[in-house]
Length: 319
Image (cartoon, rainbow, N blue to C red; front, side, top):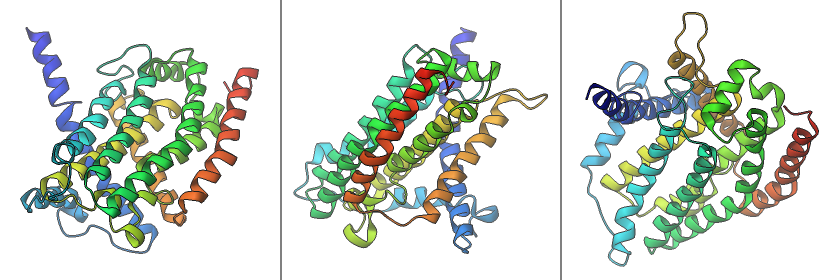
C-alpha cells in the first residue's frame, strides 16, 4: 500500500504532473526573459520577482477569457486538439529521466516512442488548424506538416548516435552509459548540433516559426483558438519546450547525474535551463526562413550531414 501511494505521488506531484507544470511555466519565463535580454528588452517584469509569475498569470487570464468555437469548424476535433496537444508531451516526459538516471517509466525502445510522439504532436497541430476552417489556420497547419517532412528524418538519424554508443534504445540506459563514460556531446558534436536545429523546427521557434508567422498568417494554426483552449495550447507548448530541453540533456549532456553532494535533480535543472537558453539564443540570432528555404536546407544539408554522422559512428569515430 505504501509503495502504491509513493508511486501515485511520484506521478501526480514530484517529479510528475504538478512539478512538470511548474517547470513548464518556469522555462517559459526563462525563454522570454533571456530572449528579451538578447534583444535589449526587459521581458516579463512586474508579476512576481522579475516577472517570474507572468506565464502563470497569462495562463489564468486566458482561462477567464471567452472561449469561442467557430460556427463552421469541426467542433469535436477543434475541442479535442488542445487536450491531445497538452497530453502528448506531458505523457512523454514520464520516460525521460528527471529525478535520477532512471525515469518513472522505462522500457527498451522508449526513444522510438518519443520520436513517434513528436510526429503525433505535429499531426495534432495539423488537425487543430484544419478543423478550424480558417484560411490562416489551414495554411499554418499545412506549413507545420511540410516542416515535419523536412526535419523529422535528420532528427531520427542523429538520435541513432546516442543509441549506438549506449547499445540501447532506452533513454535511461543512454544516461547510465554517459555516467560511466563521457557525455555524448563530446563524442558526437555534429549530431548534437543537428538535433538542436531539428528541435527548433519541432518547437516552431525562429527561424522555423513558419506555421505561426504572425506577419503573414496572424497566429497560424492557432488563429481561431481562444480562452481555455488557447490556454491549454500554450501550456502544451511550454511542456514541449521542457521535453525538448530534457531530451538534449538526456541524450547529449549526461542527464541527471550526482556530482559530489549535488543531487541529480539539481544537475537536471541546470542542464535543461542551459538547453532552454541555447534554444532562445539560436532563435534570437536568426530571421525566419521561407517554407521552401526550410525544406531545401533540411534535405540538402541536414539530411546528408545526419547520414554522414551515422556513417562516422558505424566506422567507430563517433562513439
